[in-house]
Structures are given as C-alpha cells and as structure tokens.
Length: 82
Image (tube, rainbow, N blue to C red):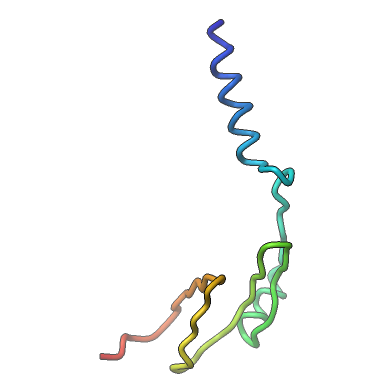
C-alpha cells in the first residue's frame, strides 16, 4: 500500500510531462551552425510549435513587437544608454 501513492504520482508526472501529443522531441544543433547563426543570423531549429533563430546586433536596432513570439536576448558586451 505504501508504494501505491509514489507509483501513482510518478505515472501522473510522466503523463503530464509527455502531454497529449506524446513525448517531447529534442532538437540538437551543432556548434558550427549556432556560431554561424549568431554571427550572420539565421534559423537554428523549427518544430510544429516553435522556431529558434540566432541574430547579432552591434548597434541599436528597430523596435520589435510580437504577439505570439518571445525574444530571449543575451548581451555579451556593452553599456546601457541613458
């Protein structure tokens, strides 16, 4: 009886993590493709519900507004403009 609750929790967690569409797929992008995308811009990976791209800015750019996208920005060098 003591093992029933942990097993039930593990099964529930597995079902929640895999979702209705099955297990989550993993996308591997090799180092050279990532380096090129972050130097020149370009696509890294695509899935049915995501797109990952790389880009590089060396100066101020245009404002971007997305309703269904999220930008993750990694600042490697620079200082804030006041």
